[in-house]
Image (tube, rainbow, N blue to C red; front, side, top):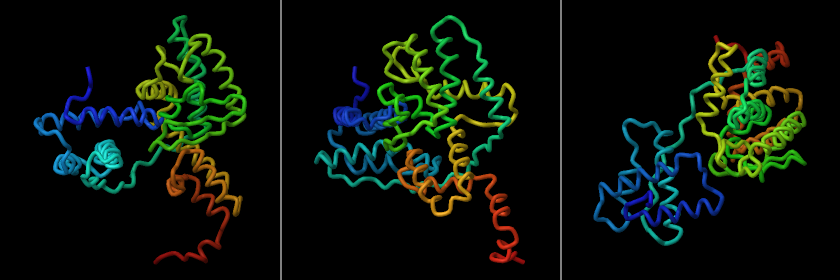
Length: 317
């Protein structure tokens, strides 16, 4: 039985097939759920329609009073993609609805301390394991999975969906296909991460010899968001009292890199570009966002400039 049931069902299925065939479909995203809800909306509100109209699209994509710009964007973006797909193939002539401007986030990520990270990775390494495949899987996967997040800045979703064929353990290169905004990129592993990845690959291959995903969850599936969140929270809370999330390891990676470049001069800009590409940012402005998150930057600036900074920028009275 088909998931989609409105008059748009054949076109939605065709669109999803196209995205998957183009390797531009993120299985773990909310895109399919958004398309399914839009399909039900069309079925309920326009049961006799046989063609997508401007009124249907505009009413659905209109910002609701319960939404901010970012939540509205998340809800309508898959539908806008569908309409764009239909327009490019002459299957509709309606105008693409306007997408609200993205609002800058106000959330400040946790600033990890050395002690906190040391506590967390000790907890990862001391996981108790059993003889069942899933217990053995968790024991050998958790320490490597979270160290990969910490050492590479890879997104949690990218790590979960990483496929065996996209991991080059000879050269230490990861090819990321399923990324934010569907932008693929490459990640070079640090030498200290490459050997644990190789040992993990050997160990996990004995449990799942024909796996598709590098970090398999069993039955040829990948781990869920809940798996990442639950494991991180339990292990983090063993010895740490502050609040943190697994995704913030990505922020930490960017911040630590930027902090180390204070004496690089002109090379700073080249390294920032490398960092931007490695983290999968489509524009370098996304990487510059981390300037505001560098907790030690004010202290570094004071140390490097001394009193000269106050002479250049006098105190405001």
